[in-house]
Image (cartoon, rainbow, N blue to C red; front, side, top):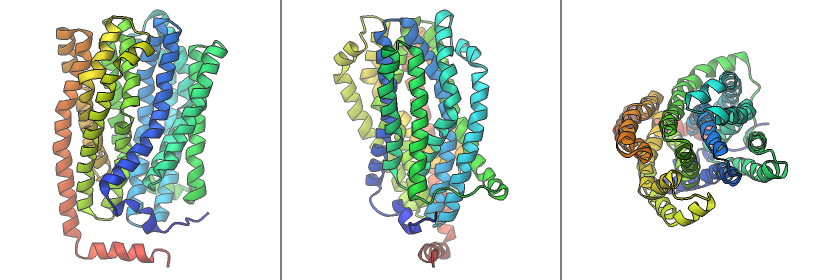
Length: 470
């Protein structure tokens, strides 16, 4: 099937209001993300209703490992989205389709290999996080069911990234919404109806991943020309540019679960109630801040298309509008969290204790600190789409090592379990400053390079756009 859309129609972010593009892309992408996160949130509610602390703790430990595997998929999706968006911005629709095809194939192959490595080491990984006894057994059993489905998740994530690179945030959103609906319907049936408890929750998640993969691929086939037939030559051509972004992006994403694993380990020192409280916070965070989590993937195509078209002022404008959007969202969501405290306590059936203390700490002043995570997300999008993906790696690893371990150690020593969360947030603020400085330098360099390429490069791009199909 040939691509029926004109190249200039595909590069939709090179015109129009940048803040509006960012808002629409982030809000639509976040609806899909929050559909999945909301199901995880409901999972935790159902599991809390079973009245077994070890089940909630097992989900907390398993969540850290699943975050680790999902991060691999995010890295491959970032590479696919960045390469396709830049090709579309330059008017090279055929190149965009070829890169989409090859990125998807490499993602499935690498994802399957990565899942196999993790699956054979589940007991070791869960024990490394601090899980012991019955909690360890439950966490490993839960993960043994979900981890093999990683290739399906990779297809869904990469397919969604390609759709967003085309500016089609709505269809990318619908893929995750369908997956979330399937999970939400199956959860109560399997957990309570068939009395499968943790096993039922895991099976529901696998079914949701399969649905996300299918519903992400269908729009690409129907509306964007589908995929090329892969050849050895095309796979060889694209391997290097894909890996040039994917490797640092994967390393960047892996930093987050490794940092979170250390935080989980530190929290485990204060008992299963502390781990359960942190697990609830971990489910609340993406539900509340799904828009910010979506922002990095949403703003990436906007920066990528404008960079591909040589519109350096719009690249800078997109970056600063992204930070403004982040600030507005964080203030609004933090206020809502604070007002919702009594309902959250009732929902999770929390008595006065450590778990309630941690949840109330987050649903208050600490949630405002999420702004600094948003700064890092926006900066990472700029790095990945402007040819400096290893800056993302440096910032994220710094944030989740130097910006986590010493801050958590000091926080735990001074304030106990709440100090673990406080220390983690303060370290994020420090590295958000580092990310901001680096992003400004990268954008300035991109502007300087654009000036050097004038006066003929822009005319050549316009000629290519106008005569691509003639």
